[in-house]
Length: 460
Image (cartoon, rainbow, N blue to C red):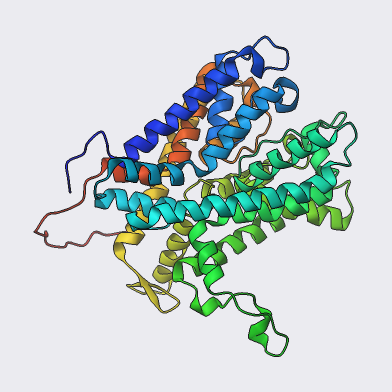
């Protein structure tokens, strides 16, 4: 393994990411970014900049009321760049550095864009930018049909709202500038327009799925046919890679679990005032948005503790590898689940779908899960010291939401102290960069030519 240099790609990616936050914070602190023309102050400005660039969506002020059109434009640019920053930055750095990537950097590329070949990064990044741009425009066009009907919005304002919401949904950013409903806020406006939720939901799913899996699905699509039962499926599941199959199964299971969990815990709660179909629609939308995007369509502060605890787990898992979502990743959960299954059936090898998962992969998933859990376990007590007046459940929800760059909030972000805000900003940055990338940067490869004797240790 080559000696580490300051030009190591992960470090340069981190430097560019911090530079983006610094620039965004300075712009948001300027008087033109605030609706009152006075200025936001560095605390609010930098918290919002970090939240936007990490596509989190946590806010300490009302986005609609506080920021001017210029401020909204800065937030839009930050979440647009933040959603694709790793992919474009990796490509640019490879071209600038002009050297062969190390094995550590190849792992970073794999976990960022789903490609090991450095030479293919430029093409991958170009395809992603083109595809995402098309989806942005298509989503905005579909959203414009409904947003145009909201009273008080001109054609230009409706178009701006549409493209903002489309980018926010696809990038899992969690920001919305829809007009606040009287007495209900921004979430009530979204909840009053089910059509918007139907458009936003697939955008969130695509953004949280990951580019390599979208390409695998595209390569293995089949023609729809009623003549044979296999023709009822759009994709040939047996030809998909093991990674894609595990991601699809786990993601679908998490969506179903989130929807049913929300229905069960809130049927006589925040869903009690809705019809049966309305309640199912809201539960399905939050089952998708509550995992990665953080766009609420009802008063999330009124949800019960059990609902919030369910979504703490879902936010901690997050989206898939090489997606715009963060968390420990669906892939990690899938590997851990397969390993547990193999242990339960007393199989020495970790096997699924007639394929074996190597010990190094399982150890890597365990390490990522343990490091992420340890990170949350360290931050939560710190938050209880900085903000002793905030309930622990609310602090846990905010910390995990920041780590998973989700943005769903129990409404206490604006009441947290300066020290608490700093902790949340660090959490958002770490959650976006990824514990796995940090491990790759700081842990050298094992190049020893020897092995110690094995010895058993009693467990249980």
